[in-house]
Length: 53
Image 1 (spheres, one colour):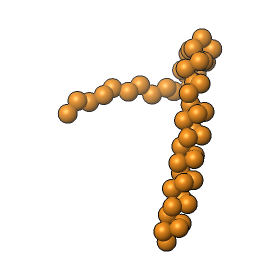
Image 2 (cartoon, rainbow, N blue to C red):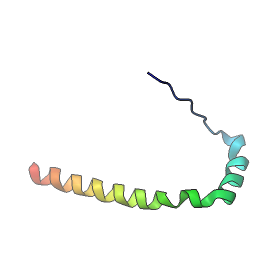
Image 3 (tube, rainbow, N blue to C red):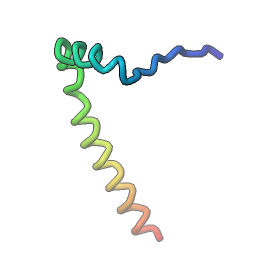
């Protein structure tokens, strides 16, 4: 099994994160669509479970 290494940002990293996002903010554009799709999927799941019970 291969392990992955993760980095966790702490409060002192906020300036670096801000600089990164100001340069590469386009990377965040897919997230609102993912959130909306997830919300729709959860709503559908709730409807199906509600009808089944």
